[in-house]
Length: 113
Image 1: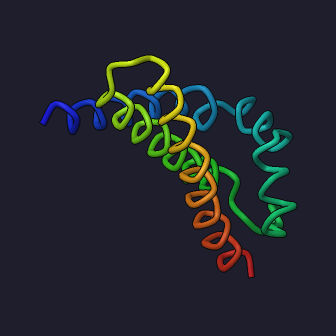
Image 2: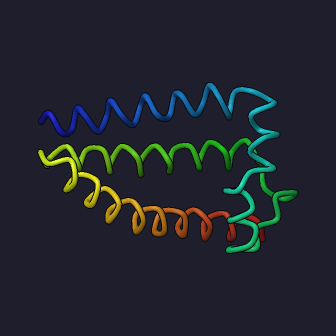
């Protein structure tokens, strides 16, 4: 049960931080438009951000990133050894990012058409 609380706490904190810094500020959205994550989605999924609402995309990206980080933090809390935590975190983080970003890219690719 403590792992569920850890997940929920981390998810909320990470998303709120992202919301305050990126989504809620006009300067944050402008920075996001020029950032590497948007470039990744443009190149990998041929997304046209002129057709996509950037604020809605930023919100979806924030939820996705919060889920990825909260799940990774929750899973590595199971282990006690620092080196094992680092290895497990790395092994979990990379495939989770690829899967979640693919789902997000495909979802917005359908919306952009």
